[in-house]
Image (tube, rainbow, N blue to C red; front, side, top):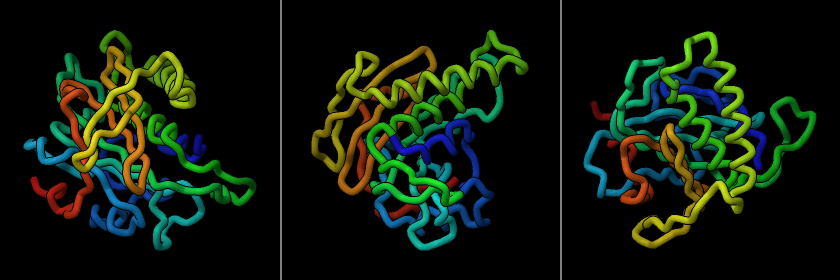
Length: 224
């Protein structure tokens, strides 16, 4: 699994990130600089759409094609901070570029090629970042997050294991197999799509009725 994924494991929904730094004022810029297609929920979704994050995992930040992954949101925005009885309903689609092994950001080693496990890790960590168990106080949340992130990493690295089931969902209208799992915090899935690796996470929105498609016009994700 691509170690790049660790860089965004605890990032929260918000403005775009490129190479771990605050992105440009125009949130579309990092998305439009990507050299791969973006995926979101298909036309079966009639609710709100919004941009979340786009990021780079290597030393290429700011260069053409420097974006390695990104997220597009659907529904209500995941909470950035703890909210008692948080009932927000959302589905977030994670698009990950297919990358061969490449140099790490500090140029001291190489990063593994991206895989469906990379998408699974990003989706799993994204769900964790949007979740805060009500029984935990603020002081204990980081311990919980560290523990759950480690578990998410192990699960993502074993997509063929018993922690996952198979779910077939349409991608551009054609059925595609995904690895899927549920928890008390929500659901996560990961698989492949033409040109990219695809993940998703959500809560309060059924994954069984989801469908994915390429996004020809990202302006649909910039409307209020």
